[in-house]
Length: 281
Ligand SMILES: C[S@@+](CC[C@H](N)C(=O)[O-])C[C@H]1O[C@@H](n2cnc3c(N)ncnc32)[C@H](O)[C@@H]1O
Image (cartoon, rainbow, N blue to C red):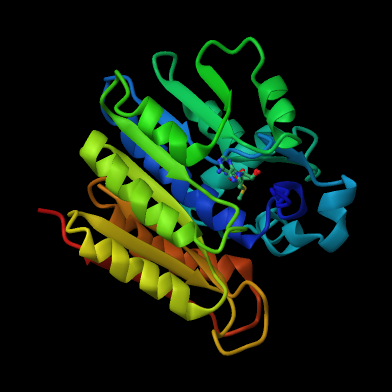
């Protein structure tokens, strides 16, 4: 049964991390004139009202986008991310938060396409409504993992698969490893970005070892830990695996991750990690 609703977590520090990185990946795809396709396999509702009852329950956005909203000394990537959120909030007060679909859509050129997949019967109609009449966006009520087999490779032959699961299932990490293998068989040159939570350290490290055993080249791992891993908080941090990352993404992240950690201002000794799990050939 699907019980996870992203509306409770929209705009939190994990969203900031994943959406800042996502913008960097799309910007890199824009460096060439040829069209690209983005797949968002776990798309959510598309956008979120931070004044809604779910968002107000724990006000997670206050430790995420809320921290960055009025900061003056942000670097260019964080400023660009905040600008994208400001587009939805023209009066300057933070209320609407773009989910990954809205964020990606804003960055498409007229020749690019976006395929969105969402399984939850509650979030799918909102997602569908958000993009009604948009000829560049296709919205599917389906399983994100099964969709990879159906849709890859795309006719454009360049682009990104963004996988941002709810981690409700005990075997989510195993499904992700299978998804990476599927992607590699069907579209070895495509870029993939996979978000994961860091609650206990062991499962995410095991996931990374399993990815290394696939023998697929060019796997970069970026992690942001907001709280020491031995503290009894729920979500200590999160990470993103990027397969076939754009040129020099590692250099950008080397500068950006410490900036992000500082901008999120928890007062805790956080940590970052940036590591090639598999080198590029
Ligand atoms: C973390 S949220 C996605 C947030 C979104 N990517 C964003 O950044 O705004 C995960 C979503 O995956 C959906 N989901 C869960 N299992 C799924 C599956 N097998 N296929 C597609 N969507 C699924 C959940 O309903 C939820 O909306």
